[in-house]
Length: 107
Length: 160
Image (spheres, rainbow over the protein chains, first blue to last red):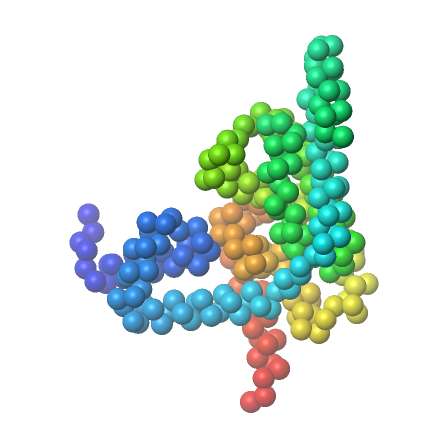
């Protein structure tokens, strides 16, 4: 087992930076990570640089908000696709009736 | 999973999918069409697995995990179609792109897709690797190239 020295500890947290930035870190790890960051100013600076760069790049990428009409039309198209393409193949008459009944309910 | 449940599952993804499509093809109608085509391709290919899966909407964590799974699944098709379509359309659309986003749209379509999955959709490198079916080093390389070109372009505009 690797001894828990300050250097090893720091390396462990360094490895976690990526999951911290992309939001895949678990809540428990997040609390632990935040506590470590708050108690290590050097590490905090390093995280801040990374976060600033992440934000800068995010700002350089267009973040278009679709109009209400666009969203509505897309939702309608997607709903129609689901109801047209996501049908169970009928294996008997009963399935056929069931599909038709579903279609009627979801008109 | 029933069709109505699946619809409920994917409706909240509409805006996110549109945004990613727009980052590939900067035109409202074309982006909308890209989302629909990617979604249809996904449905046709994954129909069986969707119908077999069940979801408990009362379990928020379970619902969240499944929604993310569908999001990534749809992106696989949307990305594939979008990258090819973007290569054909981007030249025609260049003049309509706002000046501040021209550096972004001058990047290669696949680099653009990786950049927006990483920095806008906040997906991890592993998830992008899975979506695009390319090795991890290729994802990292695209992120580095995109970052270098965008920041370099930004620095060019800053007077010394």
